[in-house]
Image (cartoon, rainbow, N blue to C red; front, side):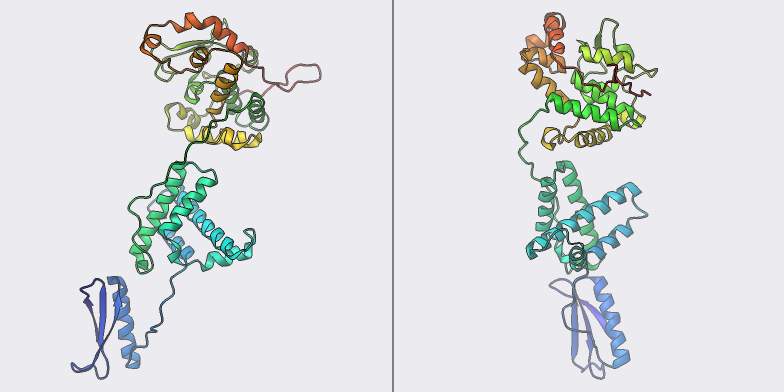
Length: 401
């Protein structure tokens, strides 16, 4: 009664004959973009011809499906193919994209962004055709302006590209163009580095001491970072055996970042006083759990950064002081404040572990012996942390592991 023909221009055509259906009866047809749509249309035509003797398909253009429903269908199809954590990441990316589109529609209509009824109405009316290349680019800019990192923005956009491909293959080809082959996010010019002040660093350390009692490793991490300016991996690799009785710290070769002979540093007086109060029976100075300990090898650094980001935000420090580098911000403070206090740059660079420039200083200078008096003076310029004290003047003890 009806059959499918392939069009020379691309796509398919469902053809049938009207009237008595004989060979002389006039032909009618409807076009379809893919085979699946053509099969569905053929079944509909045959049903109408058998029941009514004519085709009753509405010639009015079909409305595109709702975007939120199609994205939900895509997420449901992933239940058995991805891990729950990945599925949650995909769901968050879709929710953020819908939120961006709703914000754009409300702003164009002059409506308030906090009107929940209007937001729900717009979200349910968004058609699948709203998924365009321009919308994806605008979504990335929106995320960057919200403070998301470049890597996070690129991953969110890639998630939506996967959804785009699935939607086209699942029957929405007529509504959606080809997805971009590659989604690129333009790198923004890095902002001028602004080092936190001593007071801001102190606020972060004290926030860790007060609020993170169930994770005491975070306070010890922030304390060591505030007094030494060491890298994240170096702090997590420090052991109690690295502290000498004379108040010096020896950074082993495997602790440092590529230093063949290690490095010996004097400790600030404030850190020496805290050392005796915080000493515990563990091997590492910072007794982080295994998932934080993995940061020393690079696989768990994201968890440490997330914990420190929450600490900076809890302390109320402006985001531009630590955004993107919540652990590295202490290094910026050490380098900036100590140099402003009159210490030579060469001494500051050795203190934080920067390689000197030039072949001579790098390979032939015994920096430890040549710079030691200035290193001792440099750490004395680091002010003590204003720890909470009891009525008698004694420092309020911190619960160690």
